Every structure is written in structure tokens, then in C-alpha cells.
Length: 516
Ligand SMILES: *[C@@H]1O[C@H](CO)[C@@H](O)[C@H](O)[C@H]1NC(C)=O
Ligand SMILES: *[C@@H]1O[C@H](CO)[C@@H](O)[C@H](O)[C@H]1NC(C)=O
Ligand SMILES: *[C@@H]1O[C@H](CO)[C@@H](O)[C@H](O)[C@H]1NC(C)=O
Ligand SMILES: *[C@@H]1O[C@H](CO)[C@@H](O)[C@H](O)[C@H]1NC(C)=O
Ligand SMILES: *[C@@H]1O[C@H](CO)[C@@H](O)[C@H](O)[C@H]1NC(C)=O
Image (cartoon, rainbow, N blue to C red; front, side, top):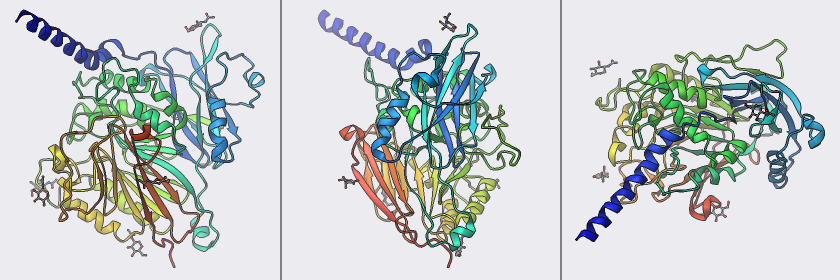
């Protein structure tokens, strides 16, 4: 009896220490205040946005160099060489490495933006690989480097006149990733050394950029430590300081939107507290490096410097949705959180996920890209399909906003080659009108039962996959081989084979999209 009791208390102590290790150690002992890192966000034909955090250096100088990558074979070798130089950096870095680095600009890091700053490169060559290095300068005159990053600038898009007349339009062929949801070391493995294997798996793929559709942090899982700005900032710093994140940050430019866990589960209270704090931390770490929001565009003209640091802080009232293009492929990233009606409001013509302004902007965008872009990808942090039945599946997703969904789908039906990209459900599903819903990149899935209802009087489903604590999708878009029938091939990766081969492929054959 006594032995049983001892074993039980021992088990309890072990269980409690696991809870402590998972839930409280990061909060108490890993605030990651000294995190210094760089990552790439938006890509344009002329440049990129590079986000840098450094709380210790007095300034960081950014230097660039083009990379002579001509084909996929040389890509990895050249990237590895530039990303992993010898540890010591002499003052004459160009000479010692034989790389012609060009000085771009010097950044300072205000404490009131948690030492985060964004540099915008605007005078680079299109479709060209670049490396950027950040040289930290300390008061005692020493210099060291933060991590280096690599990216390829976006291709030029034809003018509408060229697109309409030219039979030999170059088009594009490229890959990008889609997914959502990461929580370090979750599902929990005691004393785990690899806490974000999903990001490591993703980093091995030669994609041009990743669309990260929310739940990048979990403010309320396993425990809500508080609504203060510092509580939100700490969670971003913990993800970005994870060793598994480094190869990902070095190689994969990422465009973000947030979902509910960047604020609180099932968030539907618009700008109510603590949205201001949650949004501020999101903007600093993820939003500021996104493509420009509507109306945010840079003052055109004037002889632009080779790079500039965006003047921050950002006006938080600016729209958080945005659109961008990659060659003749167009993207719209919805904000499905900040402008929505309460999830429990009965569905009606005035229940909205997007809010009136965003919906109008979406419709205007659809009209604008209708005949100028081969594919139109619309990203939503919550699934478009109404088939999810478990927990909040029928309320928090578009299933709870079906009237507005129909209104949007009626307009979408008039536009060729629209594809939805969504996340959130920790499962993967592809249905019609085509919605590729892929998550989690690094989180749990519900192992007990399917939460997706494949009954056919709901939306048709093409493929459903429950298993997988890693899931991400990679699209190969080709508008080049046959401009009248562009293709977008989706491939789903999981931890099977350590994320190296797809477990599901699906090709969308686009229709003729040009006028006439
Ligand atoms: C210079 O300052 C940095 C930051 O405080 C420190 O890490 C480094 O060791 C110092 N170097 C020398 C040579 O004192
Ligand atoms: C939407 O409709 C409901 C029920 O008809 C009504 O109570 C509510 O005030 C309306 N909301 C708006 C924003 O018009
Ligand atoms: C797209 O173009 C087609 C054909 O010109 C037109 O019928 C449709 O209304 C357009 N859709 C939008 C949203 O502008
Ligand atoms: C699935 O959908 C069908 C048709 O709407 C419904 O009858 C059934 O109850 C649903 N299943 C679950 C588990 O909700
Ligand atoms: C998916 O396509 C790849 C080629 O890109 C092929 O090797 C693989 O067998 C396909 N997988 C499935 C499940 O069809």
C-alpha cells in the first residue's frame, strides 16, 4: 500500500514537473529578451522587407550581395555557403570572404517597439537571389553578425497592355507554402531538443515564400498569462528564438496574417481590449514586414535610397488585410478576425466576417485582377468550408457566416481561377469551391475521431487528412508553360518521411483568363 502511494506521488511529481516544464518554464525563465534575429517578409520585383531585432547593439548595418544561383541544383550549395561562413568576421569582410557586399543602411532599435525595425529594399533587380547580412556594431567598437538571410526578389509583372496583346508573355513558375498554427514543443515531449520540427521540415523546401495564416503564437494555450503588451511580445520572441526556427528564418520569406490565438480563442470582439496590445505585438514581429496595406504605399518618385527603414510605429487603425502579386499571380490576404460579427449572432444578411470596407476592397480587387492575373489566391485564417463539425467548427469558421460566404462566392464565380487558402483546423482538407485548408505546421491534431463531416449535402470534399502534427502545403504555380491553361499543383506534406515527400497531390487546371 505504502509502495503504491509512493509511486503515485512520484508519478504526480513527474506529471507536475512536465506541466511546469511545458507551461511555466518559457514564461518564467525564457523571456528571450536578448533575441537578435533577422527575417524576410514581403517581396517585390525591386526588393524586399527585412525585419531585424537587436536589443543590444547600438546599431546594425545591413549589407547585400546578389547570389549567382541559376538553377535549383546550385541553389542549396550557394545558399549554404553564404549562410554558414566562417565564424569570425574580420573588419574587412568583403576581402576575407571574396564576396562583394554592398552597404545598404544602418538601423537603430527603439525600445518602444521592442527593438524591432524593418528595412525596405527598393532598388534591387527582379527575379534575383540576394543575401543580406546584419552587422551588429557595439559601443566598444566590436562588430559581430546576426543571422544572414537569403531571398529571391519577385518577377516583374507585365503591364496590362502587354498582357492583353503579347502572345509570348513570360508568365511565372514558382513555389510557395501555406499553413498555420505553431506552438513550440506541442504536443509536449519532455525535455525535447527539437521544439519546432515543423519549421525545420519546411525550411528544406525551395519555396519563394510562405503564407502563414495565423496562430503563430498561442496567447491562451496552455495558459493565458495576461493581456499586457509584454505578454504578447514574449510569445513572439520565444518562437523566433527557437533554434528550429533559424534555418526557416534564413531561407523562407514569410507573409503573415493573424488568427484568434494571437489574441484570445475565438476572438470576435473587434478592437476591444486586449486587441490593442495583441495587434501591436503582431504588427511589430509579423505585420510590419508584410506587403503594404491598402493606402500604405510608399511615396513614389524621388530618387529612392538603396533601402530605407519604414517609419514606425504604425497607425493601428490601418487595415490589416492586404493584397500583393507575384508575377501574374495575385494574392488577397483577408483579416477574418478584426472586423467580424459575434460568432453567436444568428446568420443573417448583416452578419459579417469581413466588415463592409474589407468586403468592398475584396470585390474591387477581384474586378481589378479578373483578367490581368492567371490565378487569384484568397487567404483566410479560418476555413471556407462549412464541413467542420467538432467544437467551434460550425461557429468560428465561414460555416457561421454562410450568407456572406454565398455573397462572396457569387462574385468569385464570375472570376476565373480563384483558389482559397485557409488554416486553423489542425487538419487538411481540399474542397470545392476550391479551399486548401492546411494546418498545423507544428501543433497537435485531434487523434480520436474525424471532425470533418464528409456527408455530401455539405461542401464536396476532395481529400481529408486528420493525422499529422506537421502539415503544410506547397503550391507549384505555372503560368508559363501554357498561358491559356495555367496550373497550380498543391502538395501536402506531413511528418511522414520527415516532411520530405508529399502524401497528397492535386492539380488545379486554370481556365483561360485573358480577355478576348
Ligand atoms: C563589446 O560589447 C559587446 C556587447 O556588450 C560584448 O558582447 C563584447 O564582448 C565586447 N567586446 C569587447 C572586445 O569588449
Ligand atoms: C443585424 O440584424 C440584427 C437582427 O435583425 C439586428 O439586431 C442588428 O442590429 C443588426 N446589426 C447591424 C449592424 O445592422
Ligand atoms: C470578370 O469578368 C467577367 C467577364 O468579363 C465579368 O462577367 C465578371 O463580372 C467580372 N467579375 C468581376 C468581379 O469583376
Ligand atoms: C454531417 O452532416 C449531415 C448532413 O448535414 C448531418 O446529418 C450529420 O449529423 C452530420 N454529422 C455530424 C457528426 O455532425
Ligand atoms: C505526388 O507527386 C510526386 C511528384 O512531385 C510523386 O513523386 C508522388 O508519388 C506523388 N504522391 C502521391 C501521393 O500521389
